[in-house]
Amino acid sequence: MPRNYKSTEVHLKPDPRYGSKLVTKVINKIMLDGKKSIAQAIFYEAMDMVAKKVEAEPTEIINQALDNVKPRVEVRSKRVGGATYQVPKEVSRRRQQSLAIRWLIDTARGKRGKPMAKRLAEELFDAYNNQGAAVTKRENVHKMAEANSAYSHFSW
Image 1 (cartoon, rainbow, N blue to C red):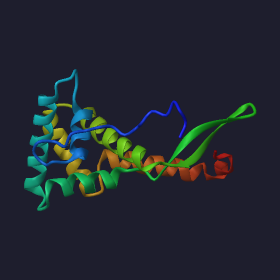
Image 2: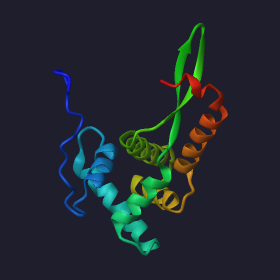
Image 3: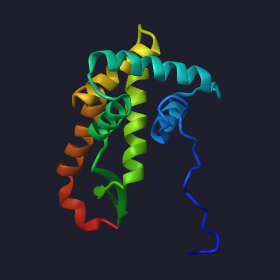
């Protein structure tokens, strides 16, 4: 291990309601301006809404929703000579999770006219059922990687 190696493992505490570190990550991503209690209220309210529609454990709902949004491959820019190619690359498990969380919350924030908890609940429900804007985003990333598979030999 290199000397200047910095641990990338984040020390998170499990959330108070479900005891899940994944839920803590989602809440931290929702949080704005350090207002964690508001972020928790938004997330828990959204989970309550989704749990009414779906007969499943809340942690199972969030896990399934994120699994349906996680990208398997993505494209990264690679400069070769004077040209820049979009090279498909497999996504690490850690990045898959962070992208899935980011896409879910960003698509929920992108909707307007409803409270954030309701928008997040709708997006979680859609992702759980393998549809919605976040799943569309994943499909677009996969299509882009498929379209640029000819450049996969430039992979690093």
